[in-house]
Amino acid sequence: MQIYALVDCNHFYVSCERAFAPYLQNQPVGILSNNDGCLVALSPELKNLGVTRGTPGFKINEIVKNQKVYLFSSNYELYGDMSTRVMKILASMVNDIEIYSIDEAFLFIDNISDKKIVYDLALEIKKKVYQFTSIPISIGLAKTKTLAKIATNMAKKSFNGIFELLDENIEENLLKSTSIENIWGIGRNYTKRLNKYGIFTGYDFIKASPYLIRKEMGIVGERSQLELKGTPCSDMTTLPPDTKSIICSRSFGKPVSSYEKLLETVSTYCSTAVHNLREKGLVAKNLTLFITTNPFKDTKQYANYINCSLPDYTAYTPEFLNLCAILLKKIFKENYQYKKSGIMLTDIIKQNVIQPNLFSLSYGDDKRHLVMRVMDKINNKFGTEKIYFASNGVKKSWKMKREKTSKRFTTRWDELMTVK
DNA sequence: TCTGGGGTCCTAGGACCC
DNA sequence: TCTGGGGTCCTAGGACCC
Image (tube, rainbow, N blue to C red; front, top):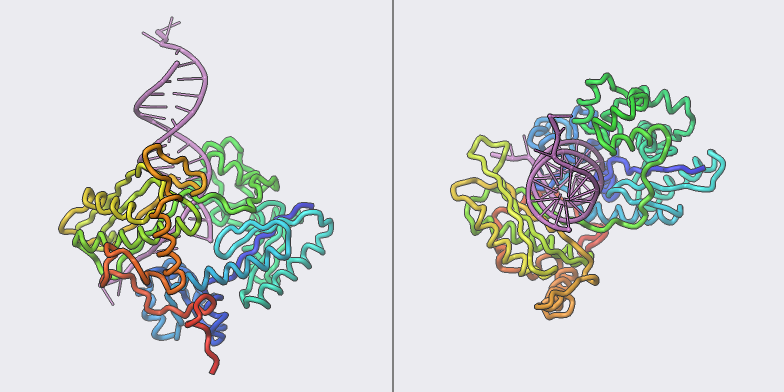
């Protein structure tokens, strides 16, 4: 018997905050996105107050005032580290694990003939993860990943946090009561299209003609359909896939209109992205830069992007920074209130497979590489941006808001939890 | 005043090649 | 009536995911 188990951490960011602040237990808790913009994670108690994911923070001021809601800025350093801990525990308990996102992982369970044993294993996993991280998880068990997703949704509605979907009658009933928009791979747009053909539930979907599904959704839809019928169509990818792009973009705390300040923003984001590139042992050749005004405001709108390739693959920050200045000049327009900018690195390969250009040194061998290494070492040890490029700006009046951040309890010595 | 950020995959169409 | 056929590569855009 081959079983896919999907482990999903319950309201993960909230649970991370709760792990270090027990008074948040059973209280309405919400985590805000970057710039304290909108809600990205909610505790069930907050959901019960009628608040939904994606709501802008300022729209719930009223509720926050009246109901005592605890709001936090997102603390990705903490969540990332907690995620690593959870994944390590999972990996120690099964042979094959595919880390799917910061709070989800597929486990592949093979060679177990008895359903009961699988269920007990899931129970043990859940217990152990909670014991070592105090993160509550839900586990769905099924024949394919897509079915496991549905099982996990059920597991979240109690059932001890574990739902096993291996009985065909239960499967059929569950598909009948599952709307297609809740199926993995079917989003808002495909839901609308399929509704036109009278397809509303998972059951309608598996009964629909494969030709129709193929026509409307392409190969992806056809795969989803097969998976729901019990045929696995996606392998476990136990090795992390090669990075194809790295994006760094942010909204500003305050709008920016001068070229100089806008350049500070893209330079800062660019430095971060190229740093990430180096951390992964990669080099890139292509840079895309974009700027945009605030689409939610009634002011003059402008958005544009531009993209350019370097002559060689590199992870040398100044080279990208120079390019940023040139590219920004080309698309920058005066008299606009810019709200967001960003850069994307593409055409990425591993540093150790660079094909050196006949006329230049390869990045790994020259002094530029060493300078970057020293810089990264200093910043990794003493904190981000201890040393940085002048083009990133010194004052950064546009910096994003993060007014309610908790401490980075698990990754900074000076932010360890104190017990009074 | 205040509305996130980072990714992947697939497809259609155009340019170009022999 | 009918105007070759087969292929690759690249890009933009659309869809999805968390």
